[in-house]
Length: 597
Ligand SMILES: Nc1ncnc2c1ncn2[C@@H]1O[C@H](COP(=O)(O)OP(=O)(O)OP(=O)(O)O)[C@@H](O)[C@H]1O
Image 1 (cartoon, protein in one colour):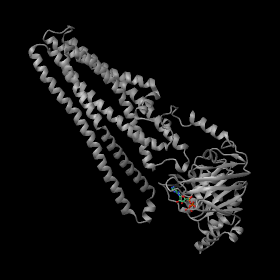
Image 2 (cartoon, protein in one colour):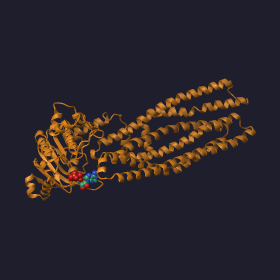
Image 3 (tube, helix red, strand yellow):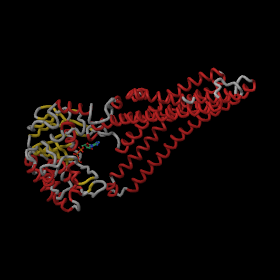
Image 4 (tube, rainbow, N blue to C red):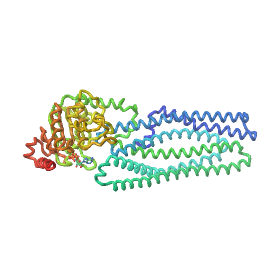
């Protein structure tokens, strides 16, 4: 999509509103024509050349009337402009958000959260700005057409002198736009890096402290800021230089007109009224030149914003950005697409039939950055079984469960629920079909209760059961406000083990047919870990469990164990079989023993 096509798509999002806005602003720009003519009339009345003959008070009344009319249309223009800009900006943000929400959870955005926020905020604002300024171009063109008609009628040569600067400035602006575009892109990039670094620092405070990396992190942050200062300076300097060129070209034109007008007035071919009209319109022509330049600048910057917004789409068609839809994410296209997806295969997220078998065949996913991941994974889970995926560090355990659940987009492979293909795992593997707890659980700045429930209604003692199964009851007793204790970024910091068990409770509080745990017990002491797996094993009822772990306490409960190595399944079987036949498993088993010892 070119910048121009993007602009057109933004404009046509609410065509009527845009036309109304353009009309309002055309009137705003045209209204000054009238006071110009009235002022000419006034000066001509002094020399007896006036044609209206309304007297001084009549002229004052006309000027007042024109001013009031202008104020009214300006208010109207701002109302339409705000309406148009808001809708356009919200449409872009909505479409971007909808796209991000539809992406596999683990690859929803291709940049850091800080950078993504900057795209949502600044690049959308930039696009709004350019589309909004395009309205002014209509008004300015109308003003230029009507005023030049009037001025040409008075004196062609003088009129050319008025409009000459316009041509020069537009040419200069055109020539320098590619450089401005480059500087703008660089300043945006460096701002994103600073925002991204702040976000990373705040979310990794503990890791930075533990690694004693404060100095290095601050040094890196300083470099980013220095870089930003340099690029911003270039960007601003270029902008200011263009501004200076715009205004000085106009001043030069003004000087020329004054010189020529002086000679003509001496010769009597030019009245004082004509002179006042030229001078009066010149002020507005200055605005025209500046505003045309501003629009060109905004248009070029919009091109930069478009490229950055498209990165958030991660290769999806550019038209997604400007799809015309209701601003509510839950209504219209979003909701209908969700229903049809879920309904097409293996039932919707709420009504999948009881799980008898979950089959995975040929499942592959390679991270584009490293080319590593999982390759041709084939496995089968029986309904009600307890399967543990184990393997050395980096062998692909997390990638396997994430690809299975649709959190990573599979490159190849089929997933079947009771023999029926699951077309969209991301939509399908959600409660009440499936629940998942990630390796690094996320906690929110809220009460422990809300962190577990995450919007789920509390009913039938499910919360207490989940807390018990997750071995959390002792911890809750010892927290000052129990379940109402504020945790997360601005509350009590939970230990790694408490976070893992909170995540387990969060998962268990949801009824699901398939529970997927990724490394749930790595931060637990031996006794708690033992208790946790026992309780999970007994409280899960008929549910099927897929557990990523290399811990004996988990392996001991497994009906079936899958050993991963280098992204592939190396061996499968019971603990007994694998202990007998598989060297990797023997190593993992004894490694866990050593870790405990
Ligand atoms: N975000 C990522 N980008 C690029 N490569 C990745 C990413 N995450 C994992 N990998 C690579 O994919 C491979 C599998 O990683 P994965 O995290 O699935 O292993 P794992 O067995 O779960 O390891 P661990 O026991 O440390 O959790 C590894 O080689 C890893 O380096």
